[in-house]
Image 1 (tube, rainbow, N blue to C red):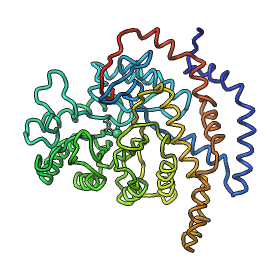
Image 2 (cartoon, protein in one colour):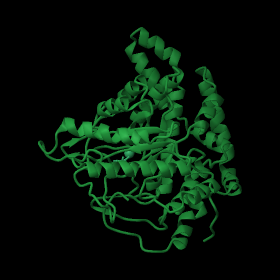
Image 3 (cartoon, helix red, strand yellow):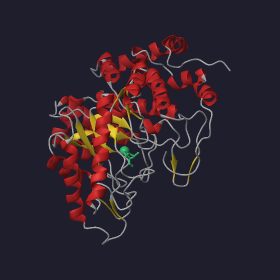
Image 4 (tube, rainbow, N blue to C red):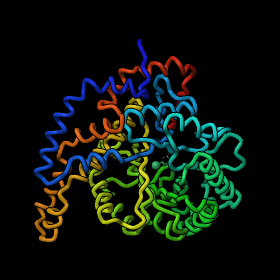
Length: 432
Ligand code: LRH
Ligand code: MN
């Protein structure tokens, strides 16, 4: 089997050769179609090429559930190998130049070396993620009954210190944000005082907030349930927004698409957080039932489009304090994580491009005239337009692959990793 480095520019250029003329034809045809709508395709392609989404370090290994995890061949065995796989995703898509780390899963003794390793792969670091939802070997105090909201101040202090350590590691790496998701909550009515738990949360987060460098942001991630199955301290966007407004201007709300009850109008939540000037960013994924962490756009692509429609509306309105950090947060249980992350990044670009080509002036007119059907049709036309040539042209213009999955498979990178990364893959349950 002959291997090729899918990160190599010459390899990508040769892989593109067989696709270039078809792309040129399709791109010209779409350009003509959009021209008739008064839309300049080059402008859209430029904006799509500028779109960036961070890769979750925990997403390049095979994910699992409590029932089991079935690791694939050539799994990354440490954060350095995880970055090598992230390098492949970025080179082939041109859209993922940063990685979001999770501590202690990505803990290393030499974060400077990690920063240099990433730089050599053309990568940087997005938000750091703390973890006080698991106990680590040798950890003095358990998080069984909570972390930042635990009734025992010593446990809260331990959790606060962990978050401050994540900031310290992140400063070495050049990260500029800390994402705080905690599983704290209750499984039974009566187990915890709902009000005081939130007050303990604010007290702990205030200590973490004080440790934030001036140019950092803190992202508060809400989640309806799991691991708590009756009440979660930061259960919804309302609790998250109350906390962000109580903490200060560096605190923002992060929307993980899988953290809501079925049928919740997530694009409405986005519109409200934009209005409140507290939209910090996203964990993109998709789901049908719970926090399924499936590939973005794989179940509800129209919902993803409607989220990006709110982001484009905010961009066009020059919304204040609006610079959301885009990140993927997925669990790849049955696909090659590299392929899933590449196609998911592209699904975000697709939703963005579809939202960008909506005929806004017409839409405004129909809305103001309460021509309901034409307003809905005008918005939907963005979603029903096949923007694939724009996405491929954007990749091509960034030195990426016109067909990233094809180029990746032809490089036999995974097979090479299977040889280069021997060693037992840990079985058993759990998300990573
Ligand atoms: C919680 C969550 C959070 C991460 C974890 C891996 O469900 O979305 O963002 O820390 O997944
Ligand atoms: Mn998340």
